Image (cartoon, rainbow, N blue to C red; front, top):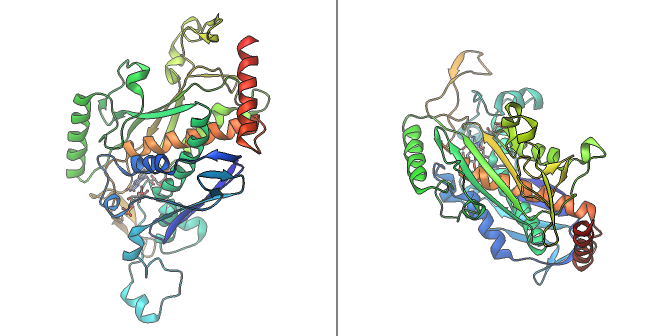
Length: 388
Ligand SMILES: Cc1cc2nc3c(=O)[nH]c(=O)nc-3n(C[C@H](O)[C@H](O)[C@H](O)COP(=O)(O)O)c2cc1C
Ligand SMILES: C=C(O[C@@H]1CC(C(=O)O)=C[C@@H](OP(=O)(O)O)[C@H]1O)C(=O)O
């Protein structure tokens, strides 16, 4: 399975084309829409999220609620485009329009893609860079992830996410799997504890008032993965590596860990490796899950536990110093309308990038022209690995 996304943040629309899905997979469009709404929400977002609806349309590949096996096209309209139709339109501007719309961006924001993107693509209006580097694109990725979740749902593989930390407010208590499961779309910061939720909201409010921004840590859990997805035989087939790469590809993500992650560096081996058990009912399983569901780049069958860190948002209402690329004089960086904290939304993006990698791994492993062929192969494989 492969996919591409296209679209600028304030352009007419975002689109994605997904190729490699089986035919005859039932698709619940309403359930997919709920996933997009989860990404749109979250405490700390700017005004843009009140403008957008983040609903989507299928342009191809689905008929009567089932996949056809052909490329699936998804489109999300940018409602904000109506305010930007001249600035972001594809038609050349008249000289008068050029004069009246002279809002060229020349003061790159530290931490955003503006300066390096401008240098590399040789453009002097940094809007040409920020439009595509904007995390608006992650709406299209979540749509592809939601489609991937439809496949995983049909195979009884479930994926959830939550927020563990926003700035100094930590909610990483020893919660049961039940408690760690998905947060509803209306959950403000997607934390489990109500007390921590209030603390995080207050911290975001204060940060915003100070013209600052804040990052945090998110967690994604995959329940009931099949054992043996990915492979130990070659570096570019290791599924933990692919998941890590996918998460770091999300705007502002700077680190990933599996299971106990970086703590493994200071813990003796006897307390890190997960002892192997066998019962007739469960087959092979582990006493603990310190390694977060991976050995040798392959799923062990235990839940996958991924954590990831998001840096604070680069655009600051009290901007940092930068340099004007025309005058080379020091200037405060450009202020674009911005989120103060997007960690809750970003946890949803992480969840969907993991879903994409999981669906891809399943499709790589099993025959999948038709969904019933895939399902039968998965069932046979489950039996075989349980009895192994
Ligand atoms: C959901 C989400 C929303 C974001 N919102 C903003 C924002 O409003 N303003 C901003 O400057 N950066 C925002 N970012 C982060 C930037 O897109 C990101 O820092 C930038 O593209 C540079 O990429 P890098 O941080 O990965 O180097 C957001 C990121 C995510 C995941
Ligand atoms: C549009 C989204 O996020 C945007 C990501 C973003 C950035 O620089 O990454 C900047 C902001 O854009 P705007 O200036 O239009 O408000 C965010 O709102 C979205 O998540 O759908």
